[in-house]
Length: 126
Image (cartoon, rainbow, N blue to C red; front, side, top):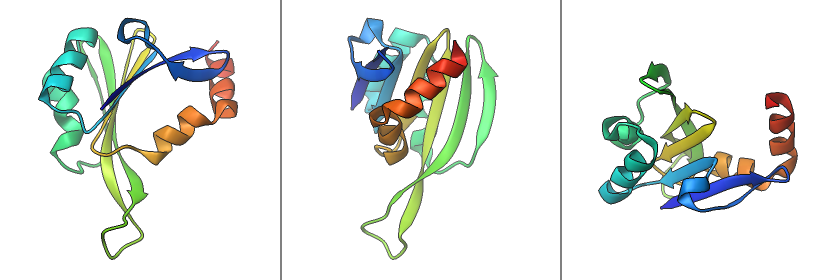
C-alpha cells in the first residue's frame, strides 16, 4: 500500500504522487517498488531492504539520497510476546521523504496524526 502525503498548515494531508512531500509504503509489492523507484530514482534494491527481514539499524548515503534503516516495534497480537519489531527504511532526498516498511507502523501513523509534532519539526527545519 502506498500513501502520498504533503504538509498543509502543519499537518500531513493526502496528495498526488508527483506533489508529495512524503511517500509512505507499507508491505509494497514488486509493482509498487518499481513505481516508487520510477518516481524518486531510489534503487529498487534499496527499496527492498526492509522487506528482507529485521536487519538491525544502519545508515548510509547513496547517490542522491540518504537511507536510515531501523527496526520499529509493533503490537504482536499473534505471538507470545507483547510486541515484535519490523524493519523500516527512511529515505531522504531533495526535500522528500520516502518510508518503506514490512508492516504498517504505528509510529509513523502517530507522526502523521499528531499535528503538534509536525509543527514542531517544521519549525525546526525552517
